[in-house]
Length: 158
Image (cartoon, rainbow, N blue to C red; front, side):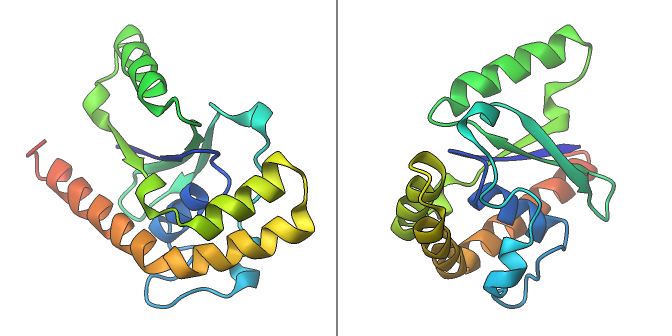
């Protein structure tokens, strides 16, 4: 399977969810701000990079994990990916798209906007990091649901 965590910009919530999935960040405690800031993509995706699939690694079950910033166009991008998989002879059901937007809180929105859209990194980054720490239990829950969905796929019950 290929697991694609997607959100608005692909710079905050989806890289954190992917890191939880890959066990780069812990599932049993809220990480420090330093642990969050050390993530490869955290607060580093620019608007020019929206729509880019970023491969982050393989999980312990051999699933490939990706991050995608889809802005508000996730449905269109997912339709395109579905069509492309058919064109290249792959099964669309081998792709699991996980929308991380429901986990995003107001602090993440404000901080992400200030940091990524306006360029006020010194103001936005602490806010978005604080927001991620507040949203962390929801992100862990989403990743746990994703692992459960993956186990159903492995069992052959798509």
